[in-house]
Image (cartoon, rainbow over all chains, first blue to last red; front, side):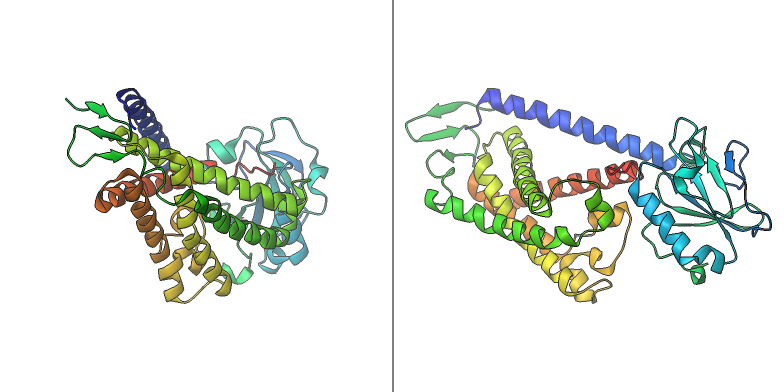
Length: 160
Length: 213
């Protein structure tokens, strides 16, 4: 039986749920319509932990890696093993993201042609508006962003 | 007056047309002896599915937990029960705000029963790896085509089987609250749309915030 008291409680719960839903919608809309900078490589705010290899191609595949995320590390290992960046005529590098303190470059291993970079100011998330760990940012030799390869997508040079 | 109630031993009426509520009939929409079976059949199906699928998960995912796959399968089945209760409670609140009482336990069993259609959709998807034929997508939703991203995850299950699930759950609710099917269907469609919209927004906002960190 829905008494007046419980019906009143239900209405309050419904109003609260609707308010939360509306707040979530507004927050999502603000995020979605926010204007972010187009990423460019290299960016002055990024800290270089390991210099790019001499003679490395000017085109770059930069993987956004958070050292605490096993998916990102697995994705990086997959890209290194498959050598798709090299096959596409690009150098593979790493951007360490969402790491508050200066990380050790060895967390991602050695031998990355495009070097290892630390996003010390959170530019990847706050200025570029990116969020997906393990994504690969493909930069043209001029530094402009050509495309982003999702971490779950097969990275094929032919897809360029 | 909006809600003036008169009660007798076994019947309560709310002074509003079409809102008579039979205290004896509604909570026992199904015979009591059938309840455990009605809940058990879908739960056994879900558990069997989890027990089969969890060991096949990406090694990276499994490395993030110390629990054995069998434990994870039971935990996932428990989550199905919790979600069914949450969905029943949500519709209980919706009906309650309209002056009708939806028995939450019975509604949760109805959610589990209607969820058998989702299991059927998942079985269909398992038989036709993405990209599946168009008729599979029509039945099981666009997830059959292999689309990815938050929008595809949130609404990828919207197919004929999902529509049938909504219609079936609406019918069961209509029986439980003694309301018209159209009213229950409109309410359930609204609830489905709102919950999936919220899911889409949350998935977009949570992108990249890995739970496996």
